[in-house]
Length: 224
Ligand SMILES: O=C[C@H](O)[C@H](O)[C@H](O)COP(=O)(O)O
Image 1 (tube, rainbow, N blue to C red):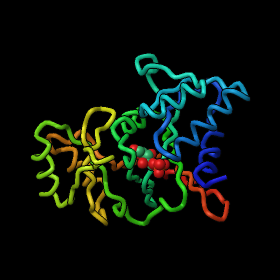
Image 2 (cartoon, helix red, strand yellow):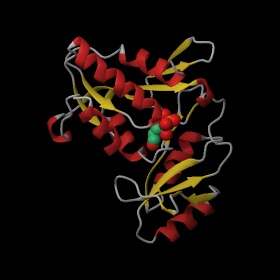
Image 3 (cartoon, rainbow, N blue to C red):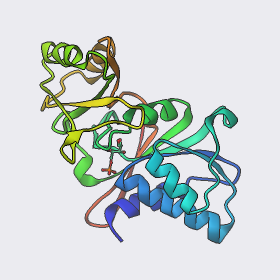
Image 4 (cartoon, protein in one colour):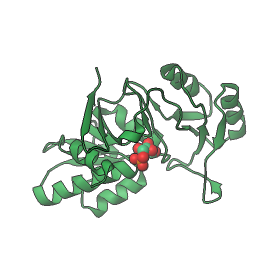
């Protein structure tokens, strides 16, 4: 079993019958959705879910996990999602897969956000992973210039030779900051730029971070 799967299984143990659950995005969340599918099928787990990306929604449907429109679920009990970096305060960088906006909306409407990572994602200071910022296409060069003025060293994300477009029809500027000294401040500064829809800093949002370590142990970190 790989480390991502190990963390995912531990998180899915926290889901109880009758819960409303947010499904995250990415290669770690993939394992959580697989495990939820197994519990629904083999244990008859009764839950309702919403997904943070088209890819996760498609996977959930394939596994016959009940998935509902957002209009039918006012609030979630918990969301299970991955992250690109986690610091000791449980602040996160997310959005390596481009799903940060939907992930932040879903996380902020969940009683608990459970983050699952392997130990390579655990860092002392956020920033070695390029911070994704979602930008509307209108006048996007001006928004990029504003990000440069903030010292963010942004670069448009490219996929298969084309500009990457999110599920929301926006672009992603990946910001090579290296070391983010004040993540709560930067999160606010970025979101004050007109044209920025949101950014991948998740501050004070994770309730629990589950870290799967290469020696096979699992470190469960609770937000204080
Ligand atoms: O946009 C993508 C999400 O924020 C992912 O949860 C994050 O990038 C971690 O992905 P992975 O589990 O594939 O490393």
